[in-house]
Length: 302
Length: 313
Image 1 (cartoon, rainbow over the protein chains, first blue to last red):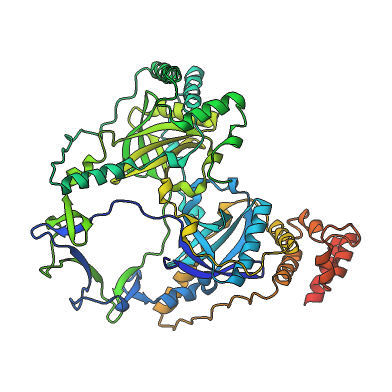
Image 2 (tube, rainbow over the protein chains, first blue to last red):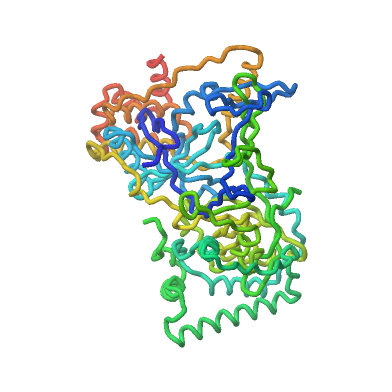
């Protein structure tokens, strides 16, 4: 099993649960190594002291903070811990809130919390059970890798999931973007048509139906090249120039609707072929219960 | 106006919206750099060819994919870019979903979308349609050599784009070894824990959480810069996992007086009047310090609060 990224104590009132933190996501990207072109051998990064011009082992490296006068203060890990000793080892649950109050803008990385012993597992199960009962998520704070994180904790399948969150001052104001917007409002007919397109394309959210095709393409290219095949590189298009906005928004909307509806008709005429399962399900459930469609959806949470 | 980090087109049916992408978040980390412990000098990262043992200029570096130990397939920049396909600068909205259906675990990074050149009208139209229908658009685009699933939604006056994780990026819980509890929690423990959750119930107000660690680290740095030694305080030991129930009850007790003013509705629930039915009688009965207080509570909450403060001091 992977090593935990952090371990410490989850504190809920006066109950302390020793826990370890593991990443809830893993990188599935295709990774490349740096190679030296003339001889094809791997390139390694070495840490070199700029003063002594020699390679420095990891143990001899400190974290430095530059003062205004150009001097540096060197800090060890224990110095950094000393700034907030409790937060570096303890996740204090401070409040419980409704999950839907947390705007996704605040969400960072997800982790899984694992109790560190059988007795910890009991207190852990207690917190999980009580959170399921209340339907709330916990909010707290802790320090990991020299950074304080706001965090939320919610029950997932068997485990509690911790999600780091951004502090309010880490979310940029959107007013500057809003300023760019002019005063021309879309006409009611345009909005109506746009909403009709949304309704036609509505499905239950099924994350497993979206695959990373780019990754698959890249893997296929690597395979072909390994076999000595030539990779055809498409001629570079000039992508930066945005396509001019459709001069006739209304026309584009109506044409989109006609095409989407035409496709749907064609598909239902030729049977199930080509229609994605999610799409069909959406249509069916929308027909029966237009407003409460979410209740029957295949959302990943139970 | 912040600088946009990507320009392209958002396609929605046949409507094409020229858009610009802006980071919606920024990390407020204390800037720390690697320095050499013995002399404080800067640490440089140098690329060394493993075979020749000498430094390699960037121009001589190519990207290789390791197909088996030590065997690489070299790809040029153009070949890597070929995987992107012709529509690399288009965010194509494929579906629309309800926000409640999206498990928050899928949200990765957040960006604001602004209108691009000639994009103002279709931008406002899409914004209005997303906002009135209360739906989230799901699409895909390639950004920084990586394909992203994206969610596009209206927030206030603007459109937010979230990059999303693919389902196969999630770690299944079954991969982790989890100790089984020696004993399952009792009903009473669960009820008490739920009461504690009730006491801590609040609204999410992001402004009310300040990053105090940053200030603490800066204060520590200042102290160290003046040549003062850093004291490393002992970290608090986790309380022994003995009696869970009494720890829960003590937590309730600790919070109650403080929270009383803010949360009037919580108090009566957590201290049932004696004889008010079998709601949760065992808790108060087990805790001798609690029973008289709750009896007073039922007559005059304010008075008993003062009484308790005196008693505690």
